[in-house]
Image (cartoon, rainbow, N blue to C red; front, side, top):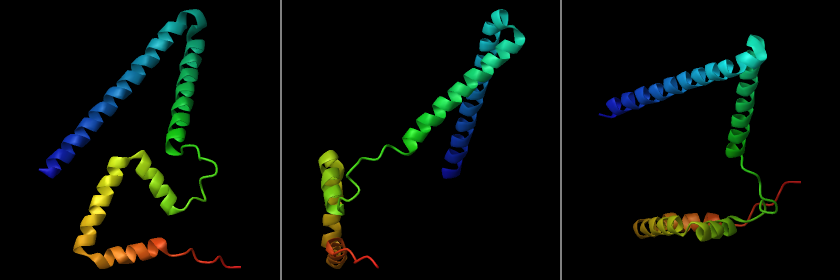
Length: 129
């Protein structure tokens, strides 16, 4: 059952990739045909190449922004507790679910919670000189 789903997923991804490739080639031919009259064959080919380069640059820059969002200034020295409280303010339902899971763990294994709290509240080690 799982293998069959995986095969269907791979087949669907392949079909989408093939359709995207066909669409890109068709769009390139359309741009070529549009510019062939006024610019000639060489100019139309250059226009297709320039458009593809421009789209590649836009896609690359957008992926770069998604992969590494801008850093917030003055936030790198916040402690874990401060960041946890800010996360709880921003996403209260997720924080509530995490608290419920921690409560279940505490009921079933109080020693694990004591160890985790001890590590959480421990002071930072002094830097080596």
